[in-house]
Length: 153
Image 1: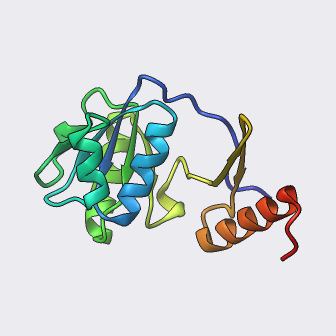
Image 2: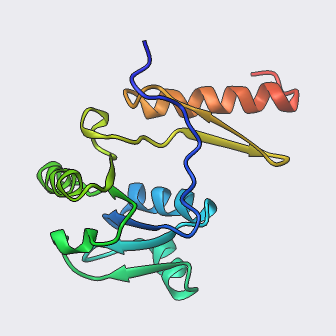
């Protein structure tokens, strides 16, 4: 039985919050920007890639710790810190605020999960493992990519 319904969710022009500026947060920002979301990152520090996105105007950075008021006006929030308690705080606050939430550290507390994406010729294939094993989803996505490109793995 599926735990999550694979759907396409339009975030174009919508305000989305990513809490956490590490590698996981960077991947989430990258995917949200591909879908034309307006992204704000809240984190005391960010990766070089996020810094480049901020510098180019692709994302906004609030160099501080998460506060509940960061959720005001947000459509979707992503808890992507390396602190489980911090992520749980973001999840609680988002649910209370009526904001869709993805907890990158726990699919059990997520309303939304991100699939491993394969984009080619205007087609997007998303592979989900119901949030249980993102590495497995990435490996299956890569296998699908190899099959579509005619490579033998």
